[in-house]
Amino acid sequence: MNRRDFISQATITAGAVITGSAVAACAPTTPTADTTEKRPARSNSLYEISLAQWSLHRALRDGSLDALDFAKYTRETFDVDAIEYVNSFFKDRARDEDYLAQLERRANDHGVKSLLIMVDGEGALGDPDAKQRTEAIENHHRWVEAAKRLGCHSIRVNARSDGTPDEQERLAAEGLRRLCEFADPYGIDVIVENHGGISSNGAWLAAVMRRVDHERCGTLPDFGNFRIDDNTVYDRYKGVRELMPYAKAVSAKSNDFDESGNEIHTDFEKMMRIVLDAGYRGWVGIEYEGDKASEDAGIIATRDLLKRVRETLSAEYTTTTS
Image 1: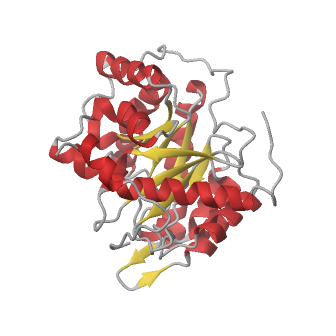
Image 2: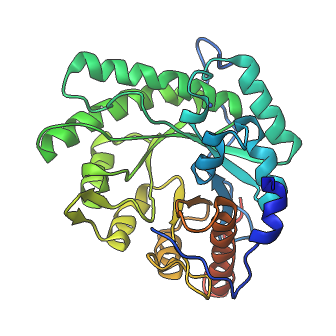
C-alpha cells in the first residue's frame, strides 16, 4: 500500500485513538535587504498552520517520500499552506541552484509558502575555540543564502556551546550576533530553538537573546524540547512563556493523543494561550514525533487539534491584519 492510499485509512476523526511516545543561492555577492516582509504572515486568523519536514523524517529516510515532493505531499495529503525545511534532507544542495529552483517551483505550483530552514550539523555557533566558532558561523552562511533563494523568512539554528552557563551565554551570543550581521542584508532572521542541553533552559536562552540584541535574532519555541539532560526537564509552559517575547516562529511538538484527539503531554489550549498572550499571530508549525501512529496520522491529528484550539480561542482574542 502506498502512502497516498494509506492516508484514507489513517484520517483521524474526533473519536480516533492515537497512542505512542512523546535551503548555490541566487542572492547577489553584496546582497541588499529585501523590503518585502519575510516574517510570519498575519491574517484574519489567530494563527496559521505549517508543517515541519521533520514530521515526515521516516518516510524521507526510507525513500518512500522524495524531499523534492515535500510541498506537493503537504498540500495534497494535509492541505497545509506552508512548510518548514530541514537541511539534513538536502545537506549537499544548499548551493545547488537547480535543486533549489525545483524546490521553489514545486512549492509555488502547489500554493505552499516556504517559511524557514532548520539547520543542524554545521558546528557549534558558541564553540569555545575561536577558529571552530568562526568555521561554524561560516558553515551557516550557505543556509542563509538558500533561505533567501527559497523565499523563507528565517533559518533555525542551535545555541551550542561548552563551559559554565555564563561562558556559554557569552559565546553563543557572540556567534549568533555575527551570523545575524551576515544574514541582515539578505533579509533573513536567525532563530534559535530550545533543542536540548542548556538551550532547553528557557531563562538561559532568553538571556542569550537579550545579550545578542539584534533585530534579526529570535527564538523558535518548541512545545516539547525541554529536556536539559537525562535527569532534568524544564517546565515546558514556563519555557515557552520565557521564549515567546523573542519568537519569530513556533513549533507545536506532538507525540501521543488520547481518544478525544488531545495531545497527552502538552495541553495545547494552555500552550496556545501563552503564545497568543505574547502577541504572536504568525505560523505555528506541526512537528509530529510520535512512533505509535503513522506519520501521516500524527500530522493530521496535530493539524486538527490546532484547528480546534484556534476555533475555541477565536472569540477570546482579537486578530491583527497586515
